[in-house]
Length: 227
Image 1 (tube, one colour):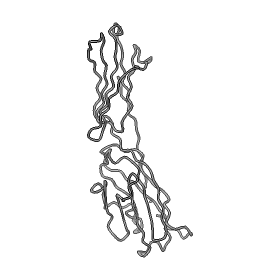
Image 2: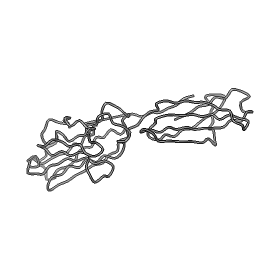
Image 3: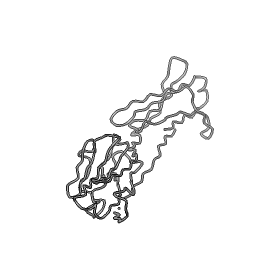
Image 4: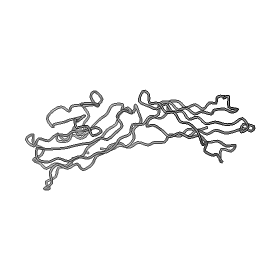
């Protein structure tokens, strides 16, 4: 019996001052595509270029982050002022984090402390002045591997047994299947299995149940649960 749940994580982060004609421009949005639930932190960085005059307080430079198409920002920073955590990110950011040492880009990034599954979704970085604006959007998944997985059987009144596999606390909602056979290298899918999924405490409790007739149990049967 086995359960597999494979994911990977990545991150990144830097100031570009340009004298070209273009105004404020986002040159890179670095959002980790996958982060494990409860990790120490996640950094979402938004690199942008500016004209020299856009570094002046009179330019109206402001950096905002938005979550899941909300019209209200979850983070705002105006150079010369303290950054603000708002909405779903209120109290969940390190506002001391600096993505660079330059006054015009220092607090451009989100430093999320111990991200949880409810923070999965789209993140939009918008950088604007009184005259220019640019934005980029990327998704981040905060995943949770199963806290526990069990395989068990129960006798029924229908001349057979129910074979069940249960995984607790998984996010996002997973696919689960049962295989059966007498050789681990030659397993076949158990058709007709029923699946039950319940969302609780930021994760899914998922149970799949298949049925075996008594006559199918005359010889040993291997059950493989894949998540």
